[in-house]
Amino acid sequence: MSKRMIILGSTGSIGESALDVAAHLGGEFEIVGLAANQSWERMAEQIAAFAPECVAMSDPEAAGRLESRILESGSKTRVLTGSDAMCLLVEQLDADFVLSAVVGVAGLASTLAAVKRGLTVGLANKEALVVAGQLMVDAAAASGAKLIPVDSEHSAIYQSLHSGKHEEVEQILLTASGGPFRTWSIEKMRNATLENALKHPTWDMGPKITIDSATMMNKALEIIEAKWLFDISADRIEVVIHPESIIHSMVAFHDGSIVAQMGTPDMRTPIQYAMTYPHRVARQGDRIDFSTLERMHFEPPDAERFPALRMGHDVAQRGGTSGAAFNAANEAAVEMFRAGRIGFLEISSQVEDVLRRHEFTEVPDLATLMNVDAWSRNEVFSCCNV
Image (tube, rainbow, N blue to C red; front, side):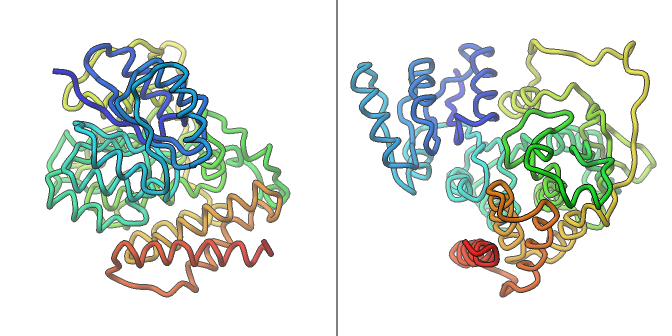
């Protein structure tokens, strides 16, 4: 029997890679649902290739154009639209596996809906756990849902953890490429342009994630995500700069052993691992050639140039609504940087200011988290005179 799969964020880089993996695996996966926001033309191409039962388009105008194209083609795929379309897709379709690959808080509600249904969720959306970690893990415990990380770092940790018991873990070591500004002085970073920030040295990702790598907000988000995914305190999570991005992350055990997961920087590897877990399936692609790998480098991150890491540890330790404030302020600040309204270093300062001033709630419900999210964005936009 093939697995019935829904991809939330199918037109993004992770979603596209997942469809490549599904095509490679042939009949092992049936794509029953796809979801996107505005990219209706690409969605039409995906419908033609995979014939899903239903798709969701959050943007009504895009959905209307897609429906017209579907009528012309004779496809039987249904189209859901509106702000709740992705949730409806997850709730209505018979599925075994949901890949959550929507960037940002927009993917939270649909991911939570999949978890509440008890489905296996491949989690590429960091924000679901950053914003609503406690709600997500509680829902998974109640429904029996399985959360399998898709981020290369968390997939590496997930795989390495199979080498020991939870109580034997001493530390999690999150590796980071260091981004495009790893060797830049803080004075030079102050004048960094959008073009500079989008030149990632290793990975090919979307603009928001690439800018997060430049500020190292991505590692801060990953610290918070790791705390919830692996039930470990923030003070036992350490970030290590590893420019080659060969070791994707490591787990240190209390007997002194360190288990690392290695591979080429190709997101299709962790995507396939999540899709086929607990099995490993052959995949075409580059392999590490140790005959050409002369050395690997490791260094500690610079806390002065990358204050996001300190904030990430603080948010992970505090919990509550702090993750919602942190994530929303960062999304808004990145948007303002891309629009040319603030400088590069102001991204972190805007986030820190919102984090300090938001009204903290220790045990929030989803509505409270969404209110904090909206308030935090508005604070950044107001500060930038939008």
